Amino acid sequence: IRGLMHVHHLPEFSGMLFVYPTPSMRSMWMKNTYISLDILFIREDGTISNIVVNTEPLSLRSISAIEPVTYVLELNAGVTAKIYIDTDSLVYL
Image (cartoon, rainbow, N blue to C red; front, side, top):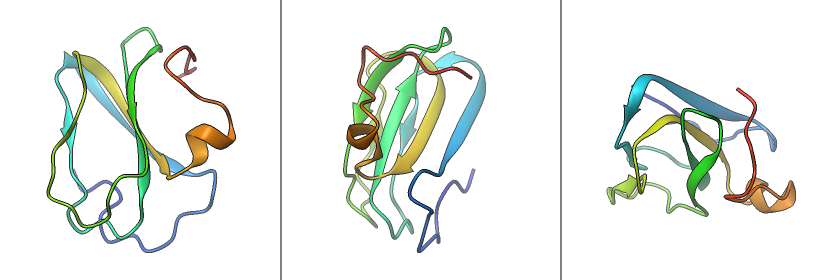
């Protein structure tokens, strides 16, 4: 899965949603990703498990869910704070 690798610009309130068939531990990385992201790990019921904000572009560090999740949402860094998304939020998918 390529995700937002090689992307140099993303409109402010845009992102990429990864949909997986079953809940599982998910990890992402920033290899070849030139923009900082907020990464949301989302449970099957649409509640947010955890959020990693302001990821480091081009990093090979693993960014992981803290429990099995079905969805991963990548947004521009800072968007979760701007629109008040936190782990108490519900994401309608």
